[in-house]
Length: 207
Image (cartoon, rainbow, N blue to C red):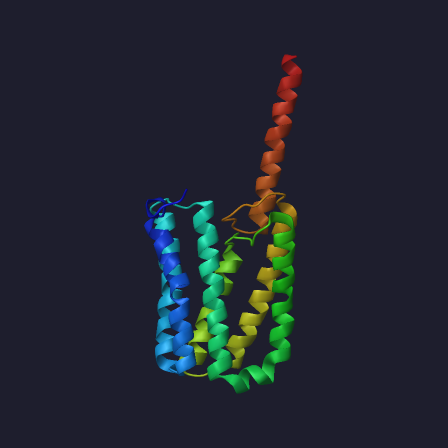
């Protein structure tokens, strides 16, 4: 049974993003654009902090990766809701492109749940880059207004990241976390296969 003692400091920063959702929703309903934007900025900041702490203190775990991913997804959704509420005209003008970009993510999510029973938490380099670009675009749009060039870059990187996620799902038969990317996944697979083959050959020699 999990207790508060089971969670480390990085987990609590992830928890903050989850606990902040009701506050963000309230600010959204109240129409407090600036306060909402600052609160969202704090949530995005905790994402960088918990990742840094987990690596620095060497306290990464599968549970922490899942919690981090949940916090990221909820924060991203709140960012989209913020854009929908405060930049409705922009969303209305670009909803087709947004749907085209978002659909592959939903497909990836369905594939992950059908194979692993839960969402992925690969945290690849491309995923981290995508999260940074998304956060910068959303915050910039809320504070100063949307920039189309930044929007298009976010769409492209997000699409490529989703494709990589799908590829990693097919590479790994079991749920894993904190994978650098497809290149490293294939490399690790080859190393594991080579070690397994060497072990098999050694067994044959000693028989």
